[in-house]
Each structure stands twice: as C-alpha cells, then as structure tokens.
Length: 494
Image (cartoon, rainbow, N blue to C red; front, side):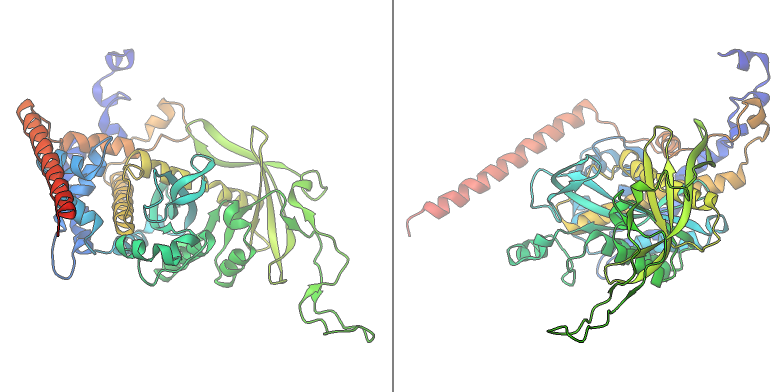
C-alpha cells in the first residue's frame, strides 16, 4: 500500500476509481453496453434468407476480450463452446453475403448524431500485412509501409476520423494490384468474392472514393490529412479542391512549387513554324520552379515554435513556417496552395500542401497536420487491441467483414469513453493534485481490461482438451481417407 493511500481517506485518494470516472456501476454495465451496440448493428449482419447475426456478437466479443490468436476456431471455443470447431463462424465471416459497408455507413451516421464529434478530422493511410503466398485477395509484391519494405502482402486503404480525443475507423477498402484484373485471375476473383464490378484503382483513387462517400453521408469533417503518397498526386489534390474539401497533405522533398504565379497557356504559333500548331497549355512565363526542400532557409520561411497539443510527455511544440505558393498539376492548371514546413525536435523536416483559405493562421495549419498522428493510433488500436492483423483473410469478403467488425469495436470504445465522460465526470482536483495540464485519457486497452472482467472467456479443462485432440485426429483421419479414395478411383482400370 502506498503512502498516498494510508495518509488520506479512500474518497480523497488519487487511487479512488470514482474520482477517475470509473464507478462500479459503470463497470457492471459495460457488458450490456457492448450487447446493445451489437443489437443496433444486428440488421447489418442479416442476409435475405438467413439470420446468423448472433455470430456478429460472438466475433465482436472475441475481438475485444481475447488478446491473441483471434482466429475463427479460437473465438468460437473461447466465446461459444470450448469444443466448438468454428465452422459456423467461419462461414459467417468468409462466405455469408452480409455487407461490411453497411457497418461503416451506420458508424458514420452515429458519429453525425453526436454533437461532441462535429467538425472532426479525416485521416487516411494505407496499412500492409505480410502474406505467405499470392493467392489471398489483393496479395502481391508491393510496398508494405508497416515494415518499410517491398514484400508479398495485402494492403488496405483505411479512413479514420478524429475528434474530442477519439479515433475511429470509418471506412476501408482492400487495394487490389493491377495484375488481379487480368484473365489469369478471373476464376480467383470469383472464388474469393471480389465484386464483379470492381475495377483497378490506385490508392489515391480509392482514398478519394472513401472521402466522397463520407461527404455524401454528411460525416462532419473540416479537413483531410494524409502522407506524401497522396499529397504528391496533383490530380488527387485537385479533385478534393473541386469538391470543396480542405486538405493538408504531405508532399515529397523534391516537389516543385513556384514562389510567384506562373503564366500558363497555349503559346502562339510562329508564322514560319512548320507542322501542326500548338494546342496544349504550357508554362509561358520565365518563373522557375523550386524544390520545397530548398526553401527552409528562404527569407519567406521563418520557422517559429507552434504549440500543438498536450501529450503524456508534455506540451508538443514544433517549429513551423508557411506561405502561399503556386503549383501546376498534371493537366497544366495553376493553383495557389499553402506550403507548410514542419520541423521535428529530432531535426526531421516535413513539407505539406494545403488548399486552406488564404487567411488561415499558421497555428491552424500546423494543428491540422499534427492530427495525422491519429491515423497511426487508429491502426495501432485496430491491430494490437482488436486483432485486425491476426486474420489471414484469403477471401475479399472475409477481409471486409473482419475489418468492419474491428471498426465497430473501435467505435464501441469511443462511444463508451464519450458517454462515461458525461455520466461519470472526473474530479477536476486531480489535475492540480497530480500537477498536470490534462489527465491521461482512457485507452482501448483500459476498456478491454474491464470487458474481460465482466465477460470472462471459457477455459479449457483437461477432459475438454482430450476430446478436442481426438476430434482433431479423427477429422485428419477422415481427410486422409478421402484423399486415398480419390487416388484409388483415379488409378482404377476403366
């Protein structure tokens, strides 16, 4: 027992759960909260002919209460019956034609109904996982940012939403490399449930589709942020601007910008020129482009510290500078954009382009760019706390179902934290007692610990273990017998 606990009554101790907004009534209610969340989404898991939605509850519960090995068989054994083989759950996740897109749509709808989540930030990025072979949907040799290398794997483009210290996955799509649309993959596309109308799209095209879908759903966001894979695509930035979507997108260090507006047009054809006259726009002025990495010491870019947000390591502050520049896109159209330069404490420098209004303060641009961090937190929680990377999904449908249920798990945690902040407010005196600027927030790991206490998993007894082993051996024997029968039939004389 600590000296803090012995020197003061429990109700005044910094270890009193009620002071931290964790009364026993809230913990006792958390299992029912999870069940109610599933009930709201139950219609998403039904098909035209069958209601197997109870498996949605089983999978959601397994994702949130198990720590590792969250595959179909293990989830079934730990949640339903210790001797369940997981076949029904596997069919629900891999083959049942319920729409994962409906789950994402409802998550966005429910965000829209919460006042504290208005005007959030859309953060998107790609997330890759290694695969042993190339026959899983979308698998191929491609860059896996998580590992920093090109290798065999699947890559997702996911859309996150950040507001009020909550990060939520609100949409996602599996990237399918171009070779997946050749004739050789036609049968495999059908076998793995890849939609027949799906065509090849690069990652910025997928990201744009997700953003426009969110805009159509009236998801309340004020800005979009992403890394340089998306920022370098001038047509992607133009499309966002055309749809009146504000962005702050990182760009590579060799991106060309103009410090003065260039003149672009179709040059006049000289009278003595032979051949066809000029028809395509070109840069007509003498203004030369410069690479953004050369501008750090330019007189127009004076770095100044900007306070961004409080973290558990203290106040986060970076040196930043910004001014408006001009860019020419792939269609030779000139646009005026903000160039933001951002220098980390370690000396690493980032460059971003934005179409924010001309009177946007430097601090606002920097804070928007800072929220890119929460794309990483979204993926980190989805992987480490909800098992997003544990399912080796060969079928496209299985991948979409798994991702949608993991997104629902993230939304359940965010909702719980928001509701508890209202129902069980923390003691404001804790801030001064602990000499902090802000108190640490509840994490997804914290919520999961509480869930595991009130929704205990089934444990394997020695007798159950024996039966499971025998069942496994019998099934293997039957498979071997079936293969032998097939071999005998193929070699039998006709």
